[in-house]
Length: 185
Image (cartoon, rainbow, N blue to C red; front, side, top):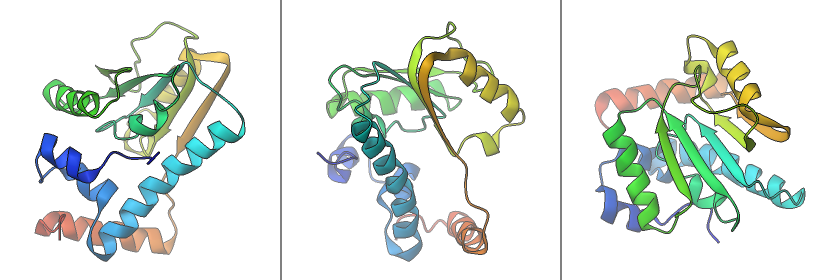
């Protein structure tokens, strides 16, 4: 099974100019590097869960964005994926509907802040937050919220961007591409 849905299927559903296509399905040199970074994280998570024979029942993705990662994480038949993000409700619904359309049926999405998760204590088996904390004004509060909602025997996966010279140069290149509108070529 592929870790991400087919780009062609998503284009049929979302249209061809969605920002997240560039991050996950990038073209050109910088786009391919960006896509490799995003896909590598997903592969590591899936391999780890399989190697450890972990089968999380309820997964929370804090800062879920388009929820493309739900495609890989809901491949476990018993997993329910809940995404949380602050993007507009209509965009979240658009991505949820797209993922439902390609087969991710055990998927929910909630518009909420990472610093104030709207869930009871100790209900998630697995919580992930990929490249989110660095964007928050109160990252410590978000980590405390993740700690509050994870079960005592649960697993948390958090990633932050690298800040070495190569990463900084790539970020500058990505910024220029965003400014120039060159996401898709």
